[in-house]
Image (tube, rainbow, N blue to C red; front, side, top):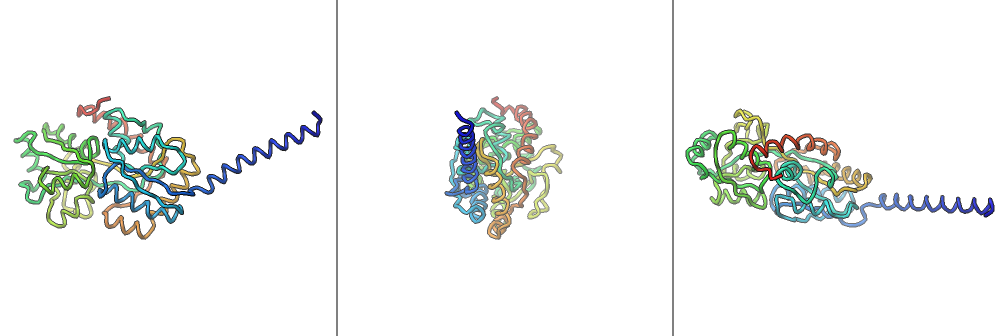
Length: 326
């Protein structure tokens, strides 16, 4: 081969390499070019479903494509999270979930996903306040009165949640362990169903996100006995917190968007930017006000570092409760 032919071959290879990288750049640059699916693991009507739909709708203007929310209910959010973890990492299948699916549920039992290796976090946008509420006609008007009743009537007090291993369930069982009490947990598929169960008298109490119970408190159907989060609720400032009662733990969770491992960083960043900007949209601001939530943003990497730092402590607590199968 002559020197001239060598130069031609080198030039052709160089052009091919440039073409390949240019096509990749074009592909990422044109993302998204079709609708994006957002999968959540809880039923319609609960706060997670409402928040996911509100922010996804607001983000459509930022991303230029529809964001279609799908509910894949079951196993305390595990089915949905596993579905997303095993999906193609092209940015067209995302997940929306809470902290429990990262640190509580995987500590309790083996899950078909590993939160440390199978998930790429995109944006955490809200921290959730929790409270324990009972029917308005219940005989207990304070947390202390409820504790006294449960102490005298082991196992008779029933409470409903959106699933085993979620923040309210763990918090209630930690209270029972510390107080030497026994009460009965009845899980449902969503926060809305858990609240409805108490409203209908099928359960006697519901530890749930404050925005899920506050409308029923305002209408006089429920009453709040204790805030399970670390700070008092601005909406119900007279209700004490679990920390004020001398406990050294509280219920905590956040809502965030995530994708499967292998999600290209440029796509993750584009999604984060679009969702972050969407939290400033008038439609979402109004929805957040209606839902009673306060936006608190963390980037995907920041949120990953946060929940990883809490994983081992939660595992220790679950093992002390006898809830960890692993």
